[in-house]
Amino acid sequence: MDPNHYRFQGVWRLAAPAPAVYAALEDVRGYPLWWPEIREVRQIDEDAGEVVVRALLPYRLVIHLEATLRDPDTGVLEAAMRGDLNGWSRFTVTPDRPSGPHGPGSTGCRVLFEEDTRPGKPLLRRLALPLHPLFRANHAVMMRRGRRGLASHLASGRRDGAGVGPGGSGGAGAGAEEEENR
Image (cartoon, rainbow, N blue to C red; front, side):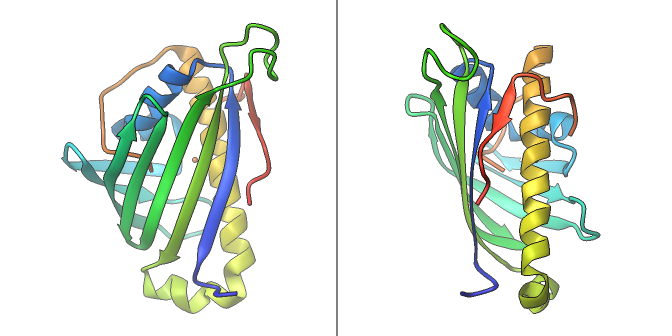
């Protein structure tokens, strides 16, 4: 196992229609409104920007994102990452089963998050072996808070801006469930 290679996968179930969830995830500039670990977003152009991330561990990451796929018909948002993290991330948003976790006739959806990345920041590469489990736990907390924040954001009905492809607070997380993050 290469301690500098991270593959993450997780599923969020949200009590919101798939198109609304897709739109919120596509609006990367709006992430700081609901995802506290996303501290800042700087738009470079229609398909690219930088996000500044700081989760529980005392370090910040600056990641350049460039949208590589935006397909609302299939619900796929994918971005290439470079900078303090290098690789890719993808959200796939699909309608939930009609008799899914939110009851018959549910307007809920399922969000599959996938990421394949390696640290670009030298300090993270040096600390990869001893701190690998801590880095993974930090990511899991960030994603859990992202799911809760997005559920709260969608429930509030706020819609702000537009942004670069995919890039984890707050809220009670009403109407959200998370499956295992690997």
